[in-house]
Length: 322
Ligand code: PMV
Image (cartoon, helix red, strand yellow):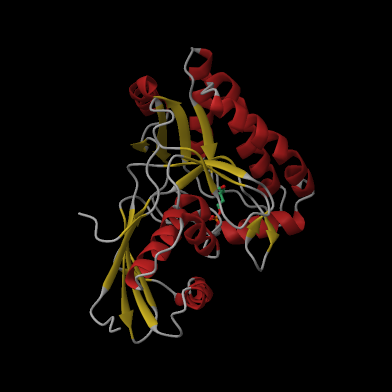
């Protein structure tokens, strides 16, 4: 079969965790030490095209990437798909800031797996795609599925907990504090937490309870039960970063200002609960009818931020997408 001139396409969206994965259980297999519960976002997208080439190359937002981060992943993916050592040219576009803690690695690796398997005309189940994406980035394991997903500790693939129409009122306001890429990758930072933080074991031991409480609260669509658990998860995760040696501090002054402003807004009756990832951005989970107020209030209290709004969205889409 001649595949020359063929192109593979895929679109994937970031997977934002309500309950965090942080730390690896097994480095080689890239499995997580803590289970996570996440939502796949609708309005943020990575669009990827894969073509056959002489050598492997990866371009993100028109910028050629260093292959180091991608090469082991591409090599393994080609082996898993039975593609031998054929070169691949990967061209990817994000419609949101890249590598700034907006989970671009989740949508990026999910879309990459989608585009390459489309190029190779391989019919794969979501579970298989999820397993392949895992080798690129833990959170990409979840981005294969839409709606709300669970990725258990030690698991090789994620599962869909609820479809994207489960909670139509659910929104995320992403507060962009800094546009530039972060200095430390999540991969490096979580490994530093694992190997140096005195709080890491505690983080791993206490996270199953957070995950199961959050799953129950989500099943009830109960903001007042879910919110405090979301908050505990990201703050416990960051406590392992603050206490690493050397410490990892992704927060910027505006990140803390947003956190404090939200505490005030909750006292005034809003159901807005924040989380953060490996970057300075603050993401706020809230009911749809609070989005406007939150953006207006934060705009006054913490000037200069940019906002993106998303709801639960679909999982990986493969093939030519109009
Ligand atoms: O997928 P990675 O390796 O970039 O790690 C993601 C880690 C967090 O975003 C901080 C948490 C999560 O569960 O997405």
